[in-house]
Length: 145
Length: 326
Image (cartoon, rainbow over all chains, first blue to last red; front, side):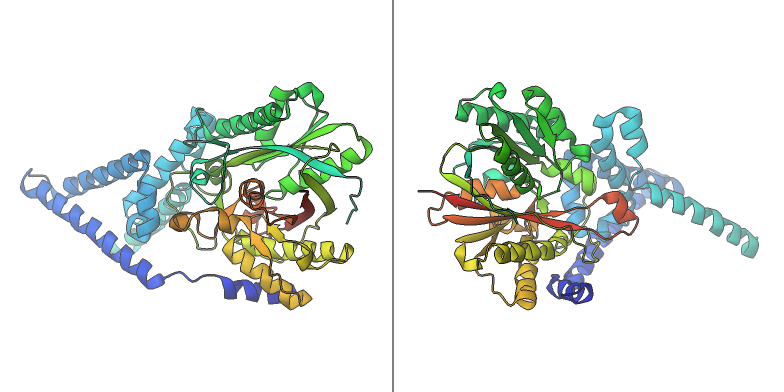
């Protein structure tokens, strides 16, 4: 059997992911997360009298805190692998990737371990996020002044 | 192929298994870990302690001291086989470190046979270990990161195994062996190691059968290490299409270690260099029907750096016969 034939065979035996189920779970979980954040933001605005911008920042901080806390408590990874994009796309995914790296590499030293590995997964998001923010910022200035 | 007529025996074995393996299809376990730390501060230290514990247990069983031994051959999955090297310091037995990923155990048995051929009065220890969370950190993602896994991916078994090999007669006789060739089928999916290793297993089994003029029926069981469910299906299919032989008595250790309820966690099955030996000692040899066994340890010689550079992954499989003398 040559390489091409074998690769075809491998494709045939690969169990298929249930994409519809994954999409549905991500939609529901991501939606619920978004809804609860909006409720929280509205609460901050109406009851505590915060401005819209400040309330969103507070919600964001709460999300990051909870995702990191639940990662450290050891059950957030199970939720992420179940709900996938529903929890990875919001800022919870970013917090989760950083706190899980931090937990792993803390034992390898503060500089050689934690410091140099905390952005192991989140580094690409940061780098390309900043580059695209820079580019789109220029485009915004050019087209809209 | 190499004939092994002089009679080399596996005299004793000692194992340490992890928490998930404790509640699995394995029987009559000796030492089990209640958690992945094993009383240590990190998973890496835990794996070192597992090897040391297995070795101490083996020496106690065989009533030997480390001075009585002339060679320790061991390997594991950590970078530069760090675990085995550090564990070897404590025993002060002359040490050979080996690495063939998950095929390490059979590789060490073969080396022991070669060594004993010329040093017939000596005693050799073959040891290997793997630790799920240590391997997870090394080859995949940080432990607490919930990366979605494909159904083809395998779950590294946690266990350490030490065996004593010598020419002294005992119940388990090591027979002919076949050293595998490194092959590359052009695959580089790290979450489907079974598919990468299956052709290596098929080629080694076929060469072994041809060289010894045997057929699969001559063995009670052909035991592969960690192909997983996907890899096992591929092995049978590959064997049938390429050599027109039906591998009916093939069992894969990794696919059968864990209970049905852990399926969601282990996906395609167990893997790692300790999967084959712990399943052999705590399942296959506990069944009296299994007299003549062909051990085929399969290894995916995967290096994260080369995978990132789009290099395809080579695989290897080594085979050795094990006969139970009643």
